[in-house]
Length: 117
Length: 107
View 1 (cartoon, chains in turn blue, purple):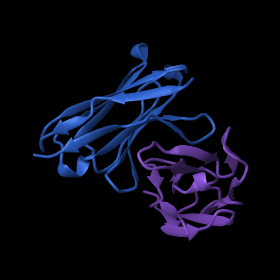
View 2 (tube, rainbow over the protein chains, first blue to last red):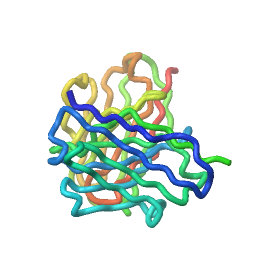
View 3 (cartoon, rainbow over the protein chains, first blue to last red):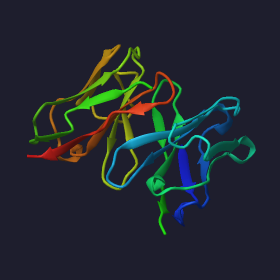
View 4 (cartoon, each protein chain N blue to C red):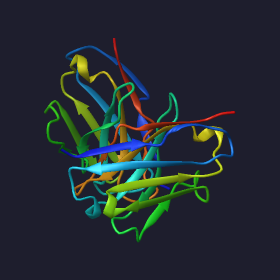
C-alpha cells in the first residue's frame, strides 16, 4: 500500500525554523518526483515546492523562495522541507504529495505548522 | 504562472442532482489537469487525472472533460458522501496552480 507520512510540524515563533519530513513506503521512492503543498486554515490549496526523483530539478513557489529548501534522501525513502524565517502567513497544514505516472498527485495526511508568538 | 479560475465558489444542491464545476486556465494546458475532492480535516483525494481519466476506485458518477483552457467536472447524481470541496490543479508546468475551490453543500 502506498503511504506518505508527514512529521515535524508544530508551533514556532515568527522568524524561527522548522524541518518537515515525509516518510514514503509501498513504492519505489527513488523513481518518483515529489511535492509539498500547503493549506492555510480555512483557505484553499497552495503548491509550495517540487523535487525530481534524482534531486536534479527543484522548483519553489515565489512565496517561499529563499526561505524554504526541499530535499530528499532516496536511501531513506524520505522527503524533507527545511523552513527558515517563518512568517505568520506560513501557518498551514503541509502535505507531502507524490507525482503519479499518468498525472495527478497522491497525498499524505498532512502535518500542521503554526507560526505564532 | 498559469491562473486557474474555478467556478462556482460554492454550490447548493440536493441528493440526486447533476452538478457541474468548471475550471478555466489562463493559457492552454493540453489535458494536464486533475480534479480533487477534499472533506474537512482530510487530505485531498484524486478523482480525475489527465482531464478525463477516472482514478481507480472512484465512482463512475464522477466524470471530467475538456482540453486546452476549459475543463469540467460533472457529478451525474449527487450522493450524500459527495458533499465536500472540489479543486482543480494544472499539471502542465511549474509553479503548479490550483483553482480556488468549490464548496458543494446540501440544499
